[in-house]
Length: 575
Image (cartoon, rainbow, N blue to C red; front, side, top):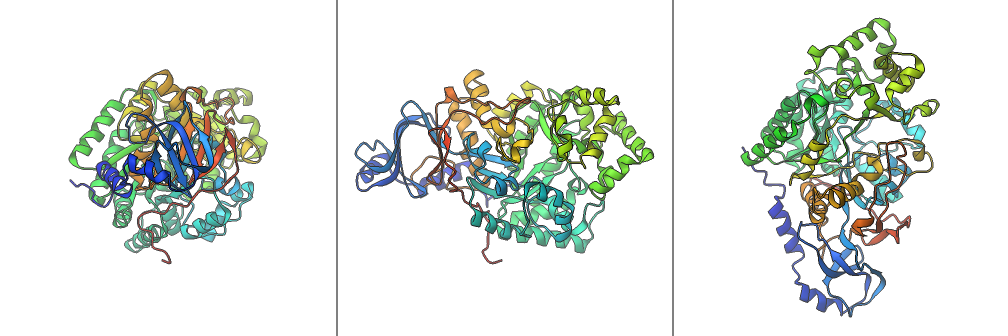
């Protein structure tokens, strides 16, 4: 049992903010009259991010910081925003994005900022670095499709590229356990020797010194799925030494979820590290109703002293690679070998039999079984332009058109698209989703690439959460269903996420904090993206301000790039 001391508790987080911003409202109002500000947001209903009720006030910004809050009637500024009748809140923090590549193509990330997102944490198991020449060669198709030349090999190099280019939001990243494994072991289903494990630990240490937020894993996907618990503990111990956290797409979100949760607790306990569970859910109809038990287990672990939290995107369909319907052993060696196995009639028959064998259901996260049939799996995006007509179609409909068995049709899509197809799987229960959302230790993730409804990125057909996660929570769970109050939702979007990531100068409306701010009328917030037509920007964010600079003003994108690279607690310049 332990209580992690090098990361902030909630109380410690608020105390740190208070010490950094120890200015009373009257004092702030007096200081306001002494000089001109760059921007004043007047007459708003301030929801400060802590969960407290709203209050009327003005917010003054100088440079990239909030410098005064209160009734600032006599203050002057170069620009004034009248927020009468609207909410003024901290910018939203996406606890799991996938924008590390797309931000190089669309640095403003319209799909994110129109949701009110001002900060994203990325790197789910696979991270943008470390890289080597072989990994780049294996993924060159993806780089070429986006027009990206990968000039970096380390996180330090990637961050330098972002800072040279400019970005519209703040971005931080984990170092991925799968990326580290691939650097040393490739994509093979093998276990590291002692020397190889030390190499992997050294890569984690370097990434933490480069500014990684912690270590992440995605244990449903290969090669991450080949990692043992002991391997993950060994890597997590390194991240812990640098003050990082461990974040995971756990090994199983379906039939064997209880065992996967126990593995998380073991890693947290033995590595002495806080854990963030990515997109907590119960996958598959057979597992609906199990979330209360999972929540109880997490609450019990927290009572023990394990620092466990989670996030959610609050849709009843998840997104994934279609290739994930294939068991992990068939992925050994990478995509080229996977495709060769699927093309070989004998091996393909073995793969199909394994997928359909009920006795194997507890051995892996069988997404084919967890979906409510092939009509519950929708193709959202493809890598091969010749297959774009499949986007938005159900596997069942594709199978009928091809005169194939649905499973064969799905496997043939994997082959034709070089294992680059994404799908939405309608396999969650609404009651479970709402139960997760209500937990006080659950923040919000988008779990999607930042994108835009035009250009090369607009040709994809993403899960609607890419455009709609945060607005949907306001629209559906706050305004319509009243599952959350608006201050509770804002806390999940902001200070709860900031506290978990150690972002002590973000996530709360306070003097001295970075000026990441949104201005909106909650009654007008609409998630317009649908599964049928996902490439639609959300509505309702009147102003989105990143580090004191509007990236949305009067509801329109400004194309400003004021975002900052966020480096983690182990950052050591020059190492």
